[in-house]
Image (cartoon, rainbow, N blue to C red):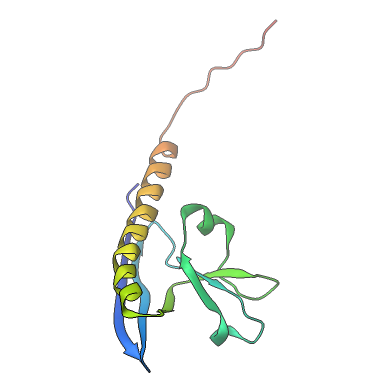
Amino acid sequence: MAATLTVGRTFSIVESVPTTVLSVTGSTSIPVEIFLHKVDDRGEVHDSYLGISTLDQLNTYGTIRTGGATIYRKSSATVTYKNLVAAVADKDVQVTTLDNLLDEYALYSASFIGTDTLELSSDD
C-alpha cells in the first residue's frame, strides 16, 4: 500500500540562528505525527526536536506528551542549527529520511497486505 506525505518546510535565520520549521500538511495511510520530540519538565515550549520517526518509532511513541511520556510525536517541528553549513546539509538529510520512512512503510505493508490459505495438520 502506498503512503504519501506532504511536508511544508520554511527556512529562515532567527536572531542569527538558522531555523527550519517543518509541518506535515497532508498524509495518506501514514500518521501525520512523524516528528519526535523529547519532553522537558518545564513545559511544551521547551521540548526538544529529536528527529523524524522511523516506522518502528511510529508504533513505539504516542502523540501525547503527558502521562509519563519522555518522547512523543507531533506533526510539526522547529529545528535550530549551530551554523548555516549544518542547516543546509540537513535539508537533504530530511528528504532522505522522509523517503526512507515511506519506503519502509511500503515494504512492510506490501509484505502484510493480501490473502493466504493455511493448511495445518498434526503429526500423529
